[in-house]
Length: 578
Ligand code: SF4
Image (cartoon, rainbow, N blue to C red; front, top):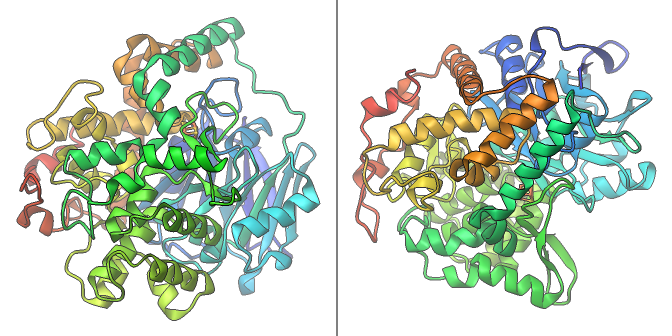
């Protein structure tokens, strides 16, 4: 994995690929690499949909190896949603395939004339770029079916749906899972719109027959991997709760904590939670002949996913995750799992971020466009996004723009990106992460729920401001480093609680390179990534004023705890002072 593939989409005569060494990016991977390329090569004042922006797709440092859980694919660019730097990552099979093909990154540059559309095919023989007119306008599911008919079912596919082609700010990039379904998405920040602007409909990765990347110290690597897998299996969250109920096991927990944002962040509990909880969802999947436990990529040992089928046992979508069930459920007052699963299917097919879409429909409900709880109308609205009607394009532009157009005061966004499924008044550590992350409101950037609610890695009272800035800082540093490795973020539960599991991760990294990797090295890596991202945002015009939650979180108490967000601005401003 020592090559960088650059594809100039504006080259005379059609897109031109060239492969070269990593050079100054040697030793980087995942988010570390995408953010370094964007920060160094994209002018901070570039239009996100213009030729000067770049789309960087990078597997992590350990992707393509035999290390368990190492299948995340990072996508980076200047975001059309936030205007700042963006990294969004996804599971599925694509990171493993791209890494085994030998590429540390694909960098798309320029843009083609006249909205031309292409498919990029990467095999061990090289790179082939061909017109994709026959795929224009297709959803991700049909796109994958067509490509499967041509390239067989041993490939992995990265694609965009109509939302990406329309360059909507909420457009995602889909990655295929172990069943070759386009269900794993680099969702946040409109990365799909940038892929659409580059004129890339799909990337087909054929790594069949290519072995795993080999470590420099194979025995040490294999031993570390055994301890690593054991660590995932023995922790209560990664070994029991996530496999049994998926990420939506959190619905009851966050609802009981009073931090489950309901009806556009009006209250912290939802009366319909029992009908859409992880326990209910898993039971429904099992009863109907779906799957309650499933891995999104072949190297996963946690298996937090599942397969959701309808009442006749027909495939609908992958198991909708906690954030998706919340976004289309509690935040919109919808308590019907089949409706939520249909909305998830539409998100995946049209190519949209489920969090942004749920939050946007919640804002549209607050603005009177439809009633809270109106599932059928929410489904119609989503279909309008896919068709590209003017109303659909408004919804596909996200919560901030929709709120402005509809005159809504309660618009839960930071840096233009919608808040996920944890109310920052009842889980104040999350509020610090939402406010300060260079990505905009992003739960994965520093998952304070672990310590505020699940008591993993200690305990910090979620309702009080004390200790939240430090908690978020440490989690943001650790997350930036994990996102560089290609590891699924859910490993964090095990490494926060079990020192030997954290040591196994260090050993995997060290054994792969034939070096010693320490905890200090990981901390330094995380800080470097964050410094790089914040520097880009500063040059793009962001200031401390952008590291704030919307005012209503400070002025409107949240029931049932009747608490406001209380972390002081000075503490927010000191999160990245090291
Ligand atoms: S834990 Fe879940 S998200 Fe992570 S790799 Fe496994 S199935 Fe995918």
